[in-house]
View 1 (cartoon, chains in turn red, green):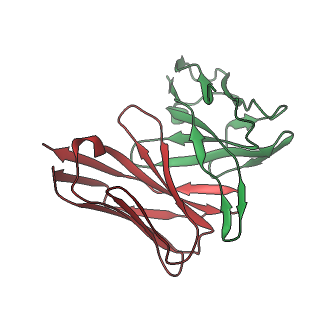
View 2 (tube, chains in turn orange, red; view 1 turned 30 degrees about the vertical axis):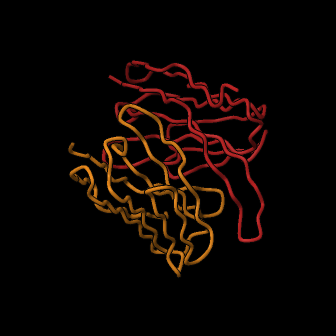
Length: 109
Length: 118
């Protein structure tokens, strides 16, 4: 089956520091989605990237899709305690979505 | 709109018992899916449906059945529960917007069912 690798698995940052999580696929993706899951909660959609080389920003969050549509990244500038949670990428092949293992972000005040 | 609802929130089963996890959505989404979430393994797709009467297997379908008789409901059946099926189960639904660069399909997740099989 398809696989989406995501690193790092855990990240601890001081409040105000930047944070980046990376997703990689061995095959070309139709699109990639990013989700955030707060502790004890359910995944919440953040964004979808479709085009090769696409870059999208949401306030302090920057999302990139690689030129070959095989990798993606999420960068958070100046982390805040409200950013705490697990961030997942999900790659789409046909009608199926394959999630990365997630990056758990802890922000130390 | 209630969005995606799941029942029950918690369930404890004994090995060999059967049960049905309920999922419903009121957004008229064609696509619905079931995932299981285990520590360190992200979310894995169990089954999905692209519309009423159409279902297909995902990454980890063994031990689970689904049906889609209406657009709104997508129940997941565990035929004979096993300890390996202890997990958190999420149902999701999505619409599809056709675009020039590709389809846009945001997934909306339910609150989840935490299942323990003893």
